[in-house]
Amino acid sequence: MIKHIPVLVDAVMNTIGNIKDARVLDATFGAGGYTRRFLESGANVTAFDRDPNVVADADIIKKEFDNKFDFIPKTFSHMADLTEKFDAIVFDLGISSMQIDNPERGFSFRADAPLDMRMSFDGPTVCDMFDKWTIADITKILRDFGDIKPAGAIANAIKQFKPRTTFELKDLIHNPRDIAPVFQALRIAVNDEMGELVRALDAVPNLLQMGGRCICVTFHSVEDRIVKNTFRKWTSIEGDPRILVNTSAPFKLLPAKVPTQKEIQQNPRARSAHMRGVVKSC
Ligand SMILES: C[S@@+](CC[C@H](N)C(=O)[O-])C[C@H]1O[C@@H](n2cnc3c(N)ncnc32)[C@H](O)[C@@H]1O
Image (cartoon, rainbow, N blue to C red):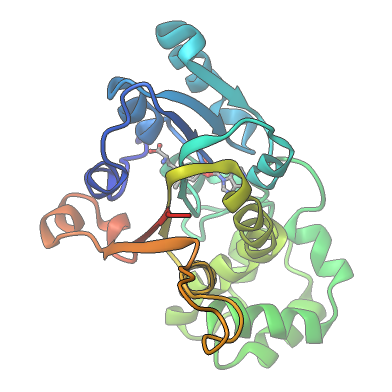
């Protein structure tokens, strides 16, 4: 299986600045590509990942970097429970190559497998949710997270034929261009990816030191909108600007970045990536 190639990692490293001896929270460990760069730059890293399959990679890094690295095998919204402060908090959202390329996980429509799609291996699978979601629920998921025009027709077909495998689901989608967005939308829903992101971002301002940075790499327009709107809120002065004199916003925006053509050529999975960042300024 191909190891995950970290996306926009140089852009993240340039935006994060000097992190020697800093405390960095990597919200999405994956294959440890970002974590390794942070550790090699002299930082202390705490990393989250909800996928039990990454624990072996985390153990390898732990052996190498010992007490400079901590791994927390939980969803990143659990960062709200942490009490220490960080100099940087980084999210590299979505799924990894190991997840999408493992046919048994049910993320990919290119291999036949049970419709699972859970990143954490716990809770209901997509297949289980097809029994619970109504036609209206599925239509909304496909519209909101996939922008699928025939969302209602596909939702009806799902409830009627109850697909149990990736190929059975694929066969219900008439337009080949809708297949990838349908799979992505169902994955986002079953893992509550947007809820996780909103809850974690809520915790970030309290977890950051003064001068600390939050950097998010997104791969989906809804995800990117959540980050953009959250950062906009943090970087604007709250309240009535006519009354608030000499008040500055608690965060400042850092330049947003997208992958270069060269990075996209080397790693096509980078093509939809956007990086946004903010720095805590008061
Ligand atoms: C794109 S990969 C990260 C790749 C990593 N930056 C690297 O360089 O190897 C995303 C990872 O985030 C994890 N993930 C996604 N949502 C999560 C959540 N809510 N809580 C914890 N981990 C999550 C996935 O399991 C996956 O391993």
